[in-house]
Length: 85
Ligand SMILES: [Zn+2]
Image 1 (cartoon, rainbow, N blue to C red):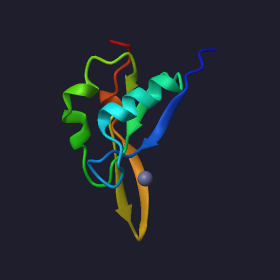
Image 2 (image 1 turned 90 degrees about the horizontal axis):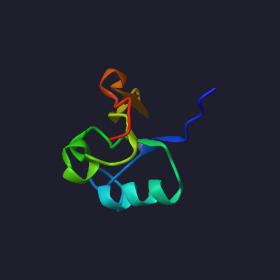
Image 3 (image 1 turned 30 degrees about the horizontal axis):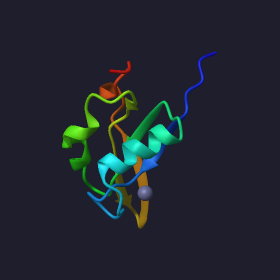
Image 4 (image 1 turned 60 degrees about the vertical axis):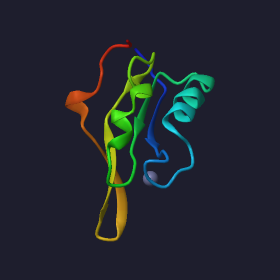
């Protein structure tokens, strides 16, 4: 069985975190994660950051949207990278 360590709930300074995309990627590497899902609030702008491309991490596109007073992350799985680049 293949087991992957992927953090599915990460915010960047594109919404309410102080961490840049570069810091998020560096942190993921330090933690030896296999992949990340950046789920900023109501924006997927971090995915346009050039630093997110060409990383040795699986990237799952995501966004956190507010529904009925609660915030929930959602993912665009069909566009998630399936191999490391
Ligand atoms: Zn969140």
